Length: 276
DNA sequence: ATCCTATCCTGGCTGC
DNA sequence: TGCAGCCAGGATAGGA
Image (cartoon, rainbow, N blue to C red; front, side, top):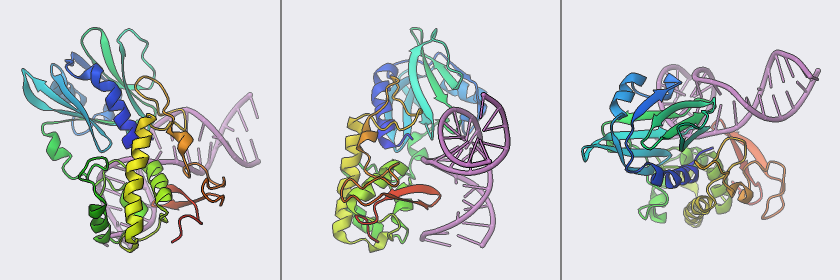
């Protein structure tokens, strides 16, 4: 599902197609796609605005808007489970799962396709305050092993749900959390304040290297859903060590990969490489 | 403070 | 071949 690498890939591919473009009109086909206000009010807020910058924060795609060169709020898009965002000619046939579209200039249209309808569009006056509660970005320089050590020690939660908590650390999802814990040799049920310093350091390195490698491969596509905005599947799923490999041999030690449920999430790990 | 459950959704899969 | 029932999962709300 779209996690940090998939959202980052989407932003990179969409940026040249959206920055500088004006939103000519908005059509909402599934009203609940709009969060926080009625579709008509949303349309009024974004139509006529220009996309100044397109960026990512956690798993949000953020389009900072402007009118007449001045800031005019922001459009936040969360893809959730099955959301896909792409630009195509307005005359291209509209997929039946398209929930919303924004007409751009030059006959192009930004379409939001979302089979399971969990994705959300949000117009906000102040993006910074809306996103203020999110944890640090793992690929920014401010995310340091020392910070992680202190932050883990300050909590007493099981490590996997903690890493999934967007207010603790931004952008991690079910797949990359399993992969990172495996690479770091940490059991998903380990209590955050009882992980030794060496493993915390490995976890910090794993988070950065796994996310970077996944971005390099344009994310993961393990079912029919995730595609880049250009319609291409990512290829990081070929690198999975544990996710979706239940019963298959660990690529490190050969032990069959175990699957348990932690915090309502399917969790994959190696009982030999990741001792409690 | 932390954990657990339900909710939102539907295509795809399993089992009969 | 058909169909009922289950599953996946990001975020959030409410209760324990």
